[in-house]
Image (cartoon, rainbow, N blue to C red; front, side, top):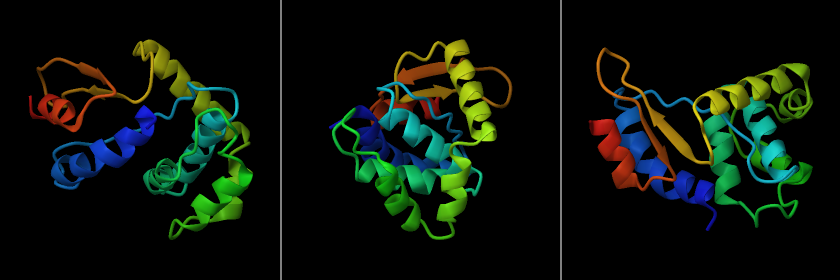
Length: 154
């Protein structure tokens, strides 16, 4: 199973319940395109476009639960439409129009620059930054739920 899919389907569900929904942690996504010139870029841009409608995590979850073999073209326009249609409140035509816009390209470039600055070498990467004074920044690449929870607890 691809590591991003594993993270989305096996690591994040409990982390969301235990930390995000309780207000202990704020989860911020910076979608990066690491694998291949098509699926990864198409998914990143569509997720950023879904974020403009406050539906990024819902959209990404559906994509990962239905992820095909990496770099095979599984994430085509039809798959984007199918996933977007399944997210309540997500306006499909607006997402499709936005994903190729200059605004989405600009955000994608910004996220790539942040990834470079944070020395992200693969996805999924979780960067745990304390928000209130002290503490060290912890970077975890493809962590298990236990590893991510331990970093959040510290």
